[in-house]
Length: 64
Length: 172
Image (tube, rainbow over all chains, first blue to last red; front, side, top):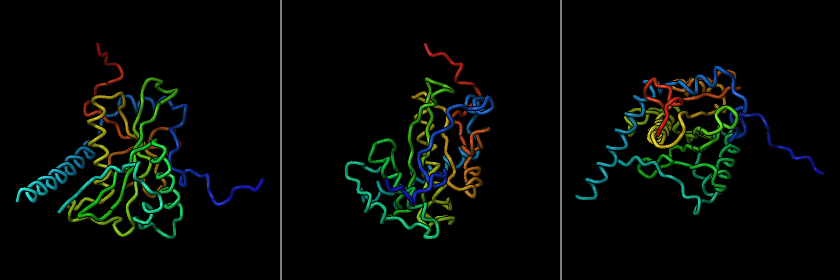
């Protein structure tokens, strides 16, 4: 059988890998108790405002 | 000025024409491999794909899926960002139509907005991702992601906005 070539199997070339089946105690603690960092929430609020502004402008354009 | 996040309809999706919409770094052929894989996963319905368009121009896209924890928490799930892609000509620039945000920041913020809303209703509390290149780790750090301990490079972002341990909350 001809060997398949040209596709690298290292993680950086592959989309869709899953988390390790067995997570460390520290990883489980991180996932169970972590809180969304303020920086992430600030960016989300900014993005939400941009999306709203775009929607408002579209609505205005539609009614003009 | 129109800033739109468009969810791709897999029923009318064509891999070939989709790939032509994006400018990849020719020195990194793996970018094309990853886009093809994301397209394949979209067609097999294992992820959703969301494109950022500004005034009808494609800037980038992000894909998201729901995964099962398996051993760690058998009855719980997490969200995963499978691929974040920004067309090469828009990488690293602060986009005026996004009030100076970068395309990656805007796309990932949209992921967070939708994930926070969904996490109020469904049993998942984290987004995880695997940076395709270690050079991207600072970008994800800036977005609030932190390394998951001893998890081979995976990063995570909690979807809890207060310090309660939600795994111990009983709903009757």
